[in-house]
Image (cartoon, rainbow, N blue to C red; front, side, top):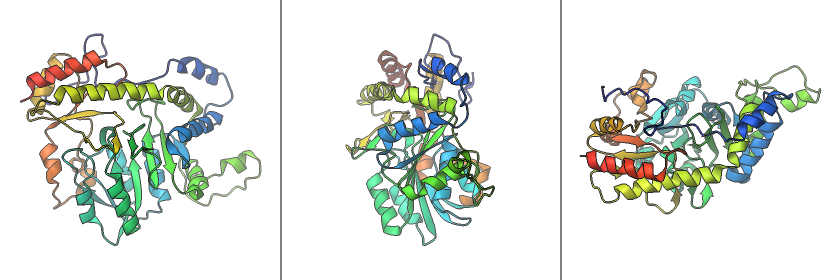
Length: 382
């Protein structure tokens, strides 16, 4: 078996998978009832899910449910009034979904390096990239660990730049006691299959400026004002380009069910995360991608380690039926971004590129599993 290209591990009783979808047990019954009713697409359940999400995570912000986290990101970039040729600063290390919508819009991408300790966007790198043409900064809370939001908010305010948070990893995370989703101009979330919980696929966008809510709802659905249309007073005209980015009532039903259970989901994931931290606390050969900053409460989507022998360790863990991987990769690997990185250097990303490895953290991982995995990592790390 090649340890450089390990296949996805089979779902079997023996072993620990890297990811496993969380679906509430209530959803089978509730979805069956929805399938027998009138509303399958965007309907009253979407409104209900938005309201529940807003109450739990978004304070007084507007909340828009979408078909995916990528949809939410694209909407955020549009609502930020970004135009073709505008400069946008983003991280070199993230899922391509963060940055691909920038290509839809013809934005000039300026990649920032990452922080070695956290793998989040490096604030020092961001500061060096700002020009008079910079219109937005996008930060990703890698693994669920909040970025240095005080610094980023300060930079944003000082330079009159929109700050957008890709919080796909960070549901339930907090900064300075405030939930991620209630801090900056826009925050986006994902309910794709392997996130904290899933709606099959889906996303959420939180918006600080409430005046943008109606526009967001129009753009989410072809540029059409659904409320007026359903009231029978809509005139057959569309004034702005829209997309098919709405969530369905089927997905929203799953979302509502899982939101009711979210505190338990998060508590368990944080318990697994902290078990790993403890396991590696005395091993200088295993560095946890973590930050002890008390302002930050981790959302515990991923647990990532930094080791010298990543490939060998991954192979050893797979031999013991433990699935691991890197999950996300540096975006300058991909041809679609090449023109934005020619001649650019990312020393921190270079250092970490072949050193980081993600360990299993999900609802089916037990504390005993985490301790066992921790012992194996400590045994095989060099």
